[in-house]
Amino acid sequence: MGEELFRMEGISKSFPGVKALDNVSFSVNKGEVHGLVGENGAGKSTLMKIMSGVYSCDEGKIFIENQEVRIDSVSKAQQLGVSIIFQELNLAPHMSVADNIFIGRPIMKNGLIDDRRMFKEAQKILDKLGIDINAHAIVRTLSVAQQQMVEIAKAISRDCRILVLDEPTATLTEREIDQLFEIIRNLQADGIGMVYISHRMEELNRICERASVLRDGKYIGTVYLKEVTLDKLVNMIVGRPLEDKFPKYERKIGDIVLEARNIKRKNIVNVDRLFVRKGEILGISGLVGAGRTEIMRCIFGADKAESMEIFMDGKPIKIKNARQALAHGIGYATENRKFDGLALSLDVQYNINMAHLKQLSRFGFIDDKEGMRNAEEYIDKLKIKTPGLRQKVRNLSGGNQQKIVLSKWLCNDVRVLIVDEPTRGIDVGAKFEVYELFNRLSDQGVAIIMISSELPEILGMSDRVLVIHKGTINGELDARKTTQEEILYLAAGYNIMEGKPAPKLSIHSDMEVTSHD
Image 1 (spheres, rainbow, N blue to C red):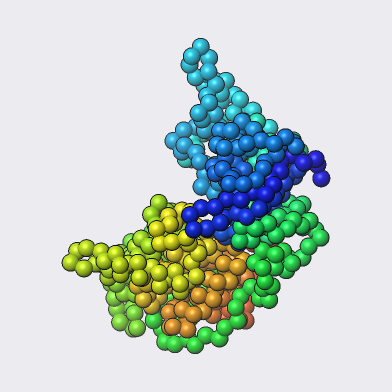
Image 2 (cartoon, rainbow, N blue to C red):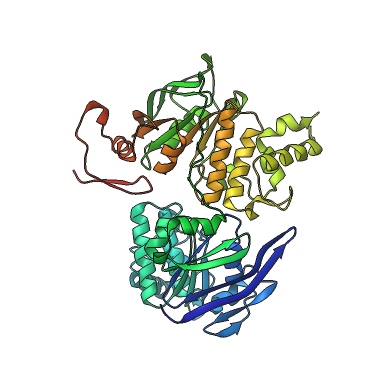
């Protein structure tokens, strides 16, 4: 453990209607990757925004190498060597990697931008970090993982000494995570202190020595990860023991509600038959890029299928767009809530009522009082934590944003709810609440189709599991009788139902599989 690099003492911060931080202390040593964990809304992002100059604290002190400093702006933080990389990357996609690394402070010569030297310096930074990217590449042509690495290079080019990584692996594959961790280790070797925010406990154990826990805006404690059990850490995070990750529940499953036949779309989707019953949770599993989401988008009418027959309660219906799907009682909570599930700049009330405006309209005008009543009902039903109806959704935690996405469809009395990666990016406590909500919906007869890359979630919450491979259903399994290995064999394209020998596979947590055959 190196000497202390950065320290925050007694940090407090309030917003209208809520105290986000209450007397929180936190420190990072030179060359350390310090984990910061807590439920959504615990105050992690607020603390890091104070650290990086986005917010100013109401009370408290900040020290860098034992010298008290005042961080009252992002530029002041950067001058002091503090940078943060948010989940939503801050890059100019139409510009080159080098232009992005030196954006706002280009290298000049005789009053003109010295492109040649700037590209040379950018490439030097990339090579030193072990980042295999050409400085001339246009950012929009890069993968999300590569763009994240460009953000790191940009921070290092500012003589960064303290780097905050906020959920850096949320959209990365296992291989990309390995590459990111290698870069993090290179930064450690240079003495850079890092704060690593993540809900993935297995990652914390791989990359962090210590982790600090926040809960409800308060500092709970700091632990050495090798000396604490996962159960103990989870207990610190949620404030109560979680005996089981998945609530025990016996569902009453009825007749088939939704059935889709002969779904074809280009070379992406080719499904003969798919159905879900009343009160059932149907798990959809498969590798990244297998076509899980594409199948559901066809059923919902978001993508046009070349052929498809849809039946509700055994009667044929037509679905050509999302509006028709909703009219037939089908809702779809999308994978990327921030991109196509929410209007982040608008308030909680509007987002909950977004798909319900027709029912709230009177003579062409929206009944605001009825809209408020409807939003308040679902805030209460789903236990959404918000200072008020007029709070902008972008300011809420990931778990509360996800509950708003679900509210948007539930207030339309949907009979079939498709949920795509419903717990991605939310903490263990919020996950449990989402699972309990699904069980309550099942009790009301709602059929749920759940796409998930988390195998424990698929097995813990589903009644049946359909495994997708290259746009087709490669197997149907009883969730209570199958195993993760069976699902992964089917996901990799092997049909173990026909008695073919199982391959040797390296199994990763994010449904990425490597075959050794």
